[in-house]
Length: 239
Image (cartoon, rainbow, N blue to C red):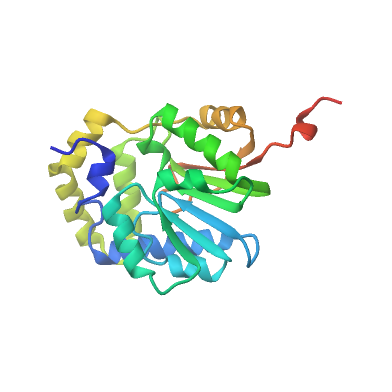
């Protein structure tokens, strides 16, 4: 029996309906992340990157791209795929502790918060704040609000599949997911959910000036996304 979300993502799983779904998902994310890169020399961290099939597109837009994922199997595949790309480095989450203070221009954490406990997220926020440069940005995306359930997620997937040309596969994929241990794992471990006000409070408590983004990254616009910058103590001090 799968014991943790890390173990789930470290093996084959039914999350993607087929290769077209996987390809379109990562191509769309890469396009959106590349658009967030502030300048060609930017130092970028994609924390919880997953398979990142189109990370080379992001790498072309920045000076250095760090791909970080908790699953060893995913990291091994990333290292092989991008071995010839000098701008891409692959790291485990614990390796990020070695990053220098104020060394990153952009951090993207997409579809990460739901798999972390609140304490784990607070720890990650401290790391992200420490490693961001003044003026750098954290984009925390695909956050699940408390009022969004699996049915709404399924509808968003089917809409994406309809435009992406894999509707039949998506319907079969939803059935496979329902019969897999993903459903049992979700019931047993749960997914962390945050209302907009709760996430903004967490970000501000961690020392960020934060706001909700008008759009989430990816296809599911029922989920939330936030942009955060390191709070300037001088600016925050009353006059």
